[in-house]
Length: 230
Image 1 (cartoon, one colour):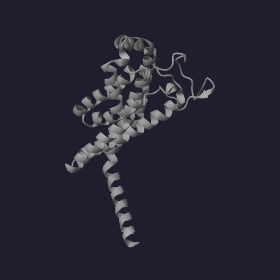
Image 2 (image 1 turned 30 degrees about the vertical axis):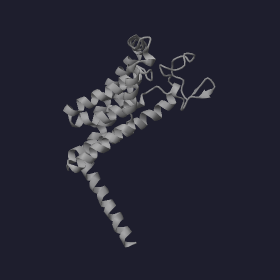
Image 3 (image 1 turned 90 degrees about the vertical axis):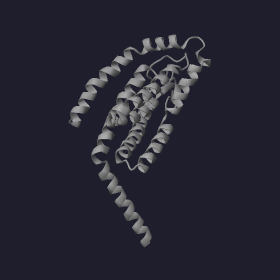
Image 4 (image 1 turned 60 degrees about the vertical axis):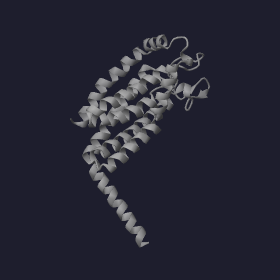
């Protein structure tokens, strides 16, 4: 499929989904509060979802990807080397893209101080800078982006293995809502953006990965030769 046509389709499909998610933010929060119950803060479920978010974050994804890449290298599997490199790159770029953007949106988290009215405040609110203030860094979701960036590549490269990876990424996104860190629209926007980034990274690695790797090896060999001469 032509890349420009694909980008157009992503906008035509993605924008209505994100807009629709915004309309369900309030009702989804109400439903989650019903699930949580009165003893939520001390429950084992909250502890579980907190750990899901912690171990589903970028550093642990990179650790898992690195271990998988080492195993693929030992097994001499070029296919899985390409897949895991693409997954790690997509996760990283998706996370950076989302985290940079959410620093400036100034959207309040669901669990922010009740004295703060929910909304988008931009980089300045109530006489202070919101950049770097966790209470105003809700949209989009960084955890969701890194998880779906990684899982998306696996899905596009190997659908049967990609489905479990996508389920785990969805669990990270759900956990972000359950611990009052993100709204439905936060994780919806992040999921769509991350999957788009994952697709482009996988296509690039699939088409040009071997050529890029060979160029890198030649440059490293030339560097070693220069060092020996010097």
